[in-house]
Image 1 (cartoon, rainbow, N blue to C red):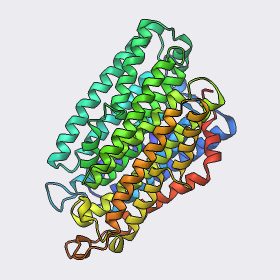
Image 2: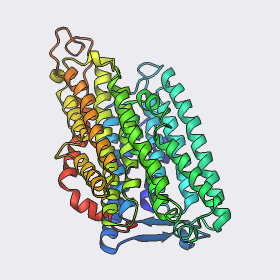
Image 3: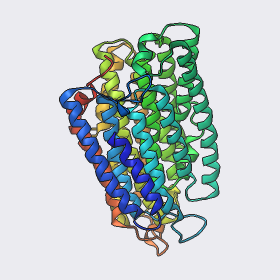
Length: 484
């Protein structure tokens, strides 16, 4: 219970004391959550999957919580990215219509703690309706965070995000209602054993997958993501790209393998894989065409999400090849969360310093802001999938699974996506390293930045290399309770 209760308690106290000490309360909460997640990880490693009935009430009357390797790895991912973003936000200057005010900063902390509560609810729920509750809390918190600074572009992007989120939630809830009508239960394991191949179950699968694909921004349902991620404050962009879309992907993964394996046909898996493949290429091409740094990274997220959905056709069938693809897809989610959050944090620092996020204004930044440029560079290595990053391990597992299963066309897409990723990463780095006279970075117009923001982004980016050399124990953890 503690990974859920602690951020909820933090939400209350940061809201009550938002005008003083909220950041300190949040860091204390982050430390407590880290200890709770470490304790739960130790339990799962020693004793395997864990089940807990809240209040002693067993399902279907009570609320059941479940922790296995997958959910624990998601909790670890959230803790790492969340802790780094919290430290970064302490040094970040929130801006908005009231210049010099800290209104955005005041409300960031309770909204972020509430978002963290929703994430942990989703990762630990063993009940599909409680997944829906966590999904709604997640969506409302994320929308509020997008609009935090009150800028017109952020308000418009937030409203678009809100409408898309409501539509996705409606489709998901209709699917849950169909499942409950057909099976009489909401508990995930019971749903899986009672699932029958009939029109009602097929419609439920379609509605749930549609709703979650919209919230995860899978191509072509990604229209809301680029403006929302590009318009939000830098800490918010890091959380949205690093964690929020991973939570809805986790739900797709959990329901696909725990609830729908009896009716999730290879044809449906191929459709998800095809959408992911097109998303990789389309998102990368659009990223190459951008002239605004944050928008480029946002379209890169659309492309990177596509890799996650390749695991469905590649893991079809309970084989060792399928297990490698499943592990590669989940590990990609972990490494991408760290790399993309670090990239948004480094970018946010540079955008604040220069007063612009146009690529043409980046020359000379390597001299005055070397740590932020280094953070973006290291994160970019992961986005390209180069060793020794964790992204290389994840892409290698997906690539070998594609070749070993005879689905060579997905291998071509993975390689093409890596090349396109290298294209837009080097496009940015070439501007950063350009020694241009009279650049904004060298002028008095450039603002000083805090060491906290630069170091927190760099530390998270470097951690992606740690994931590259510690992949074996983490993948072993992931296989505890795996559906293979």
